[in-house]
Image (cartoon, rainbow, N blue to C red; front, top):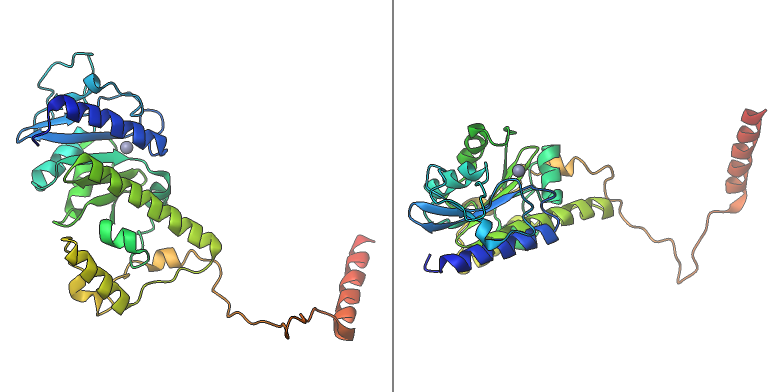
Length: 282
Ligand SMILES: [Zn+2]
C-alpha cells in the first residue's frame, strides 16, 4: 500500500485494458478496485468500458461505499463496490478485487455446474477450491450476502450464479492472474468435453500436488483429506454432461494391413438397407 496514488490509478486503467482485451467484460461490464489505506478504496467508475479508462476517472470511497473525494472528471463509483468492500472487511490480507464476466467461467455459473476439481495443476495451485454462489440481483445487498459465506481464509475466487466471477488477492496484478487462470481453466474443461473423457488426478497425485503448493507458501485445507479421496466430491454434475463414455481402443491393423468392412455378410447388409430405402421412396 506504499505505492503512490497516481501509480495505482494508472495500474487500474492498465488492468482494465487487459481485462477488456481478454474479452472478460463487454460494454460497461465488470469493476475492479484496490485498497489504498485502512479506510479508503480506489474503484472503477460506473457506466464506462473498463478497456479505456483514464486514470483520473477512478473513484475513491470509504468503507461504507460513500464517494469521499469529488472525481475530477465527474465520475461516480461503480454500484458493485459494496461487494468489494464486504471482501476487504472480511479479509485483511486482500488488497485488490476484480469482478468480471469471463465467458468460459460464467458458462459454468449459468449452467449451475460446480467447477470440477482435481483436474489441472495450475488451477489447483493458484485458485484452489472455487465455489459458486446462488444467483442474486446485481447492485442489491443480496449479491454480497450470496458470496460472503463462500469466502474462507484461502479463497481467492468465487463464481456468482448466472452472473460472473469475483477474484481477489494481495495486489491487482495477482488478482488479474486469478481471473485469467480461472477462465483459461474453464476453457480447458469445455475443450476437453469436446475432445473426450476428463481424467481426474488420483489421491496420491493430488496429495503430492497440494504438498508442492504448500511449499510455495500456499496452504490448502484440502491437503488434510486429499489422501482419503475427498477431492472431487462435486465433480459429478460436470462429468455427467459427457454424452460418451471413453471406448477402449482396439486396433484392427495387422502390421499395416488394415481390415476394412467387407465379405458376403457386409454386402448382404448393404443390399438390405438399399432395398429398404428404395421401398420407402415408392
Ligand atoms: Zn457483473
